Structure formats: structure tokens, C-alpha cells
Image (cartoon, rainbow, N blue to C red; front, side, top):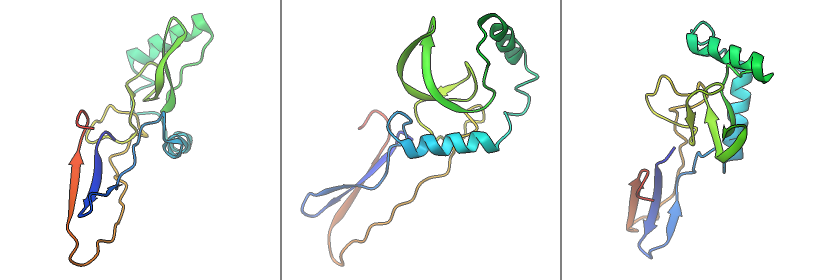
Length: 138
């Protein structure tokens, strides 16, 4: 998500070991989200909730069908798109700029805590530093 790891070798060369999972820049994550939305059911209890009932009432007035599953879109105000693409848990639900998160049961069903893992070969005897940091540092 908002964490990044880089390797700095003894010659001060920097190698990024992680990939950003922001939906506005990572098309592979967008595709993963879209495919997962096709294969999963809406979050349990969503369609029975008062919130979802109000979404259906709004839908009748506007003619725009609410979406009960995760999708990538833009926030809007008075039907004017604002900002970057985000991951929505459902229409007007929680929105995230990242597609990987830890321990948030209300996050979009397609936000996953599963990390991507990369490997790097370090020459025998070479000095390296790993820098691991999260939002705000980078």
C-alpha cells in the first residue's frame, strides 16, 4: 500500500524492491480488483443495511444504479469528478487510494492484506542497506 522498501548498495545505487499499489498508477492492481469483483459477493449484510436502502432511494431519483461490489472510480461532488482514481468498497462507501491494506474489515473486499514479494541477489561480501518506510516518509 503506502509502504516502500529500497535497497542501497555499497556504491550508493538505489533499487526499489516494492511496487506502489495506488489504483491511479497501477493498472495491474485495477485489473485484479475488477476480476475479483466479478467473482465475489457483496459484503455480508450490505444489501440489508439502512445505508444500502438509502442508496436505492437515491438511485430511483437519479437513475444511477448503485454498485454493491468493489470498483475503481473517482470521488465526485454534485456529479463533478474530483481527484484521482480510488478503490470504492461499494457506491458511496469507503474509498481508498491504495489497494492493499492490513486489518480493515470495512475496507473494500478487493483490498487485500497479501503482500507482493520480490527477491534480490546480493553479491557475497557486498554491503547493503534496506530502507523500509511508510506514508509520509517518501
